[in-house]
Length: 427
Image (cartoon, rainbow, N blue to C red; front, side):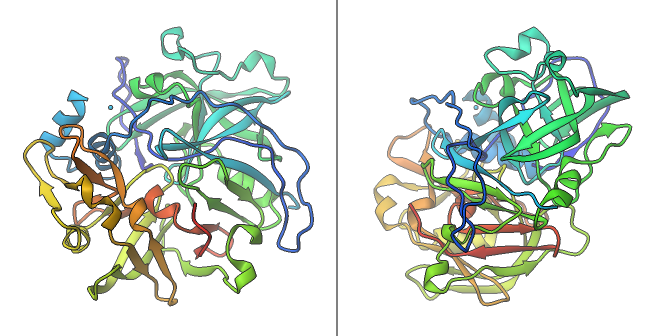
């Protein structure tokens, strides 16, 4: 979730987008690659889910473009307006609202107050609803009650303003306090306590805050404070974390400080295949070199740069790559009329959606199954579906969101400045 900043204005903030993905803590049974038990504490928090939620592909695409691109077609925006050391740890990754997001219960303060937050590899700020949040913004969200923490310390003159690329924002005051992230305890971590949040946060009652895990992006605290990511990495046995998102499932997990060999096909000889991060990148940005569409011989060979972002549901790729895929989908069309430009296709083609394959210079190929390539029914026609792969302008970075990340076991290795992928059994 990319961020920028602009002067604050004390009027209601525009909507902030939340797509895809983070986690809820579930009872853990954590084992290392040698089978030994490496974590004993477990936490379970029931999520405030909406069983009637139906993903909206047009809204998801509009939000994703606003997040990562300044070029959102006016018609698409109108369509959206018309609708919406020696430490380690594990957090369960539970799908909420049809894989729209994955939430995790993270503890803040002393004693820990657990909130359902959204782990975001596309941003660096850690902010939560708090006892400072305006009553009209809190609604049914849980809050971090600062006075209940024995170790909460205000940062002198500390303020923060986060404005995301879609123009939405939040702001508040800065504190330091303890964080429990899957049994990894981070003391004196920078926590941003919200005073006001944007409308979409208010309406999404599942989410109590954002937990940024970008590679080296500074946070938006003033005066400048260390990111939680920079405080976390030295505590870990290995300076890395892993992501195993699971399609419509509560069986996924984030792990911190270790690679869980039981979560990918290590027993069959599979290993993690690494790709270096782009030089100077503050995001988890890397290159892939080829695209292959299952069931055809079409192969596109080039050098593509992409960002792995748990905070985006969709894959956003350049127009020629998207067209290559949808040329293999019967009846697919780039719908300009009612949605401002979005790939759709007849829903009856769903069983025949081809796989989407991305190749890396190290020889590894990630296969996104065809069944993951569908995102939702088109809001304006029940017999039309919206794809999980959409277009981002060719001069913007490509984004590999949860549609991609559900297909692999992913290792975010800050120590070696690389990202790794391995094959796993898919739900």
